[in-house]
Amino acid sequence: MTDVTAQNAEELLGLEALITPEEREWQLKARAFATERILPTIDGDFEAKEFRKSLVPELGALGMLGMHLEGYDCAGAGAVSYGLVCHELEAGDSSWRTFVSVQGSLAMTAIHRFGTEEQKQRWLPGMATGELIGCFALTEPTGGSDPGGMKTIARRDGDEWVISGQKRWIGLASIADVAIVWARTDDGVRGFVVPTKTVGFRPLDIVNKMSLRASIQCDLYFDDLRVPADAILPLAEGLSAPFSCLDEARFGIVWGALGAARACLDAAVERSRTREVFGAPIGSRQLVQHNLAEAFVEYEKGMLLALHLGRLKEKGPVPPEQISIGKLNSVREAIAIAHAARGILGGDGVTTDFPVMRHLANLESVRTYEGTDEIHTLVVGRALTGIAAFR
Image (tube, rainbow, N blue to C red; front, side, top):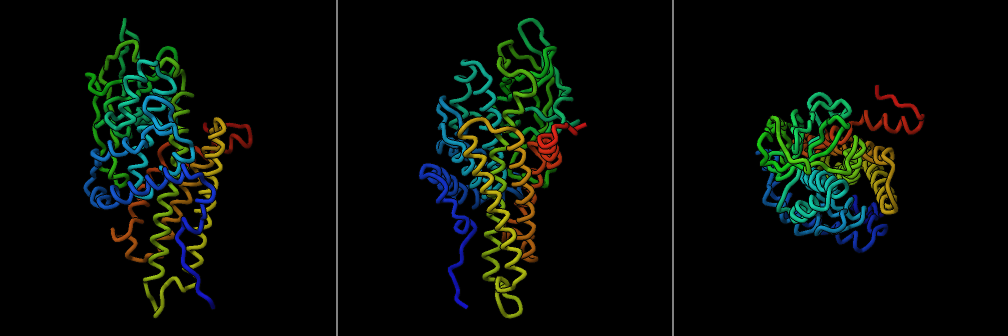
């Protein structure tokens, strides 16, 4: 039997042949950031529940904040470039892809797509550089999957809007400079640009998390918060506005979750070569090779689906059900791959010697936010049958 040169997941996938030099450059910049700035401290940050805010301007200097947007000091990069950046950051840790999603895909996209020119000029350049941080306040304690049941209200009082209510699981709220707040009005759901220093804006960090511990999520309270009439996003009418921002974030998750999967798979492959049991590396055992091969095949299919969605997105809007397919598949398979890797690593797989348990814990949050598995399944089911089964 002739031995061949071992390959990691990226090499075996051969993705480089399917992307442009510019896309590869974005990928390698993000990989360098993850390798040099995230990985050296992430296990300690996860344990200490620390988000390294000092790294945010570095991401801005690399052009990765709101990188898919045009103008206002944003990079104007293509969809696949953005996906590859998400992929590499999440290979480091889901908390950093989450940050890029909240900042760029949610908060910045809402202002860019629905805001006035004054709102764009005031906020977007500083957010692109990382000087300013944004958050996106949609989810509420009584139902993240049912924003139509929103209880936060905004009522007009002369030249002001008065916002009252509560949000939950709002990323970055306690360190943000600006919040995009969604509230029910007499004219339906509307979005508001709210500086976080406004009286009545009250964030409270959720500290008992077992997942995304190197990130920040908050309960958020609005105590009769008052903003001027021009705080409203004039082009954001109804739930279709925040949903369109969520689809931008979900697209990043399609790529990002598979970055976590790749990190787990590569750890398992490397360990299979060096860990010996019964006198030989475990990688020489057929069962181990079977599990590695199965994991890689699902990783490859997921990456090809992500690339397909990216190419579609570069041609025009991608239907929400397509994004749901990608998010559902990527996260589900990433968790399965991480589980398989944990088994191959044996008992050591539950230690910080390897990144697998950290990724597994994080992926449980990724599975839930921006639409649960169940919700995306129903989105796809509705597309196939023409019948909504949400209620």
